Length: 117
Image (tube, rainbow, N blue to C red; front, side, top):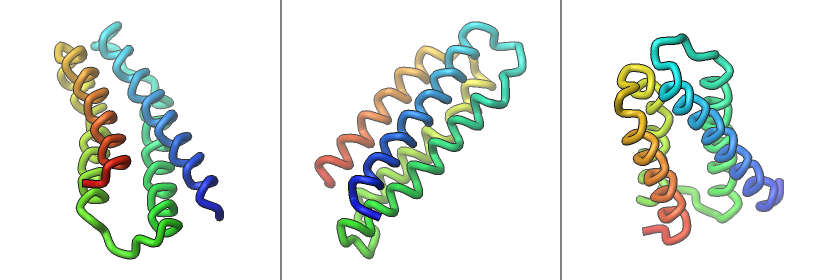
């Protein structure tokens, strides 16, 4: 597959992941006691899976056959974002803080991808 295909798939994964996370966040703010619909977590998880697969495809296309530090940093950031719905469910009173933290972490992941420290 061409580089552009993986890049587009990576962006689609980012969009789906953030769509699911945003829905979970909005639900935890609006009605924290209600059980959230499972489609929210499914969209978030599907986005994370697509991010992972497309990210490794991108690594292969740019010729990286080992994992440099920036790859490990991005994986760590996305593991934190991937686990954040648990915190939204258990600590709905932290919803604003968690939403801002998720936005900062996504920005950090983008910075890591661009500058590759």
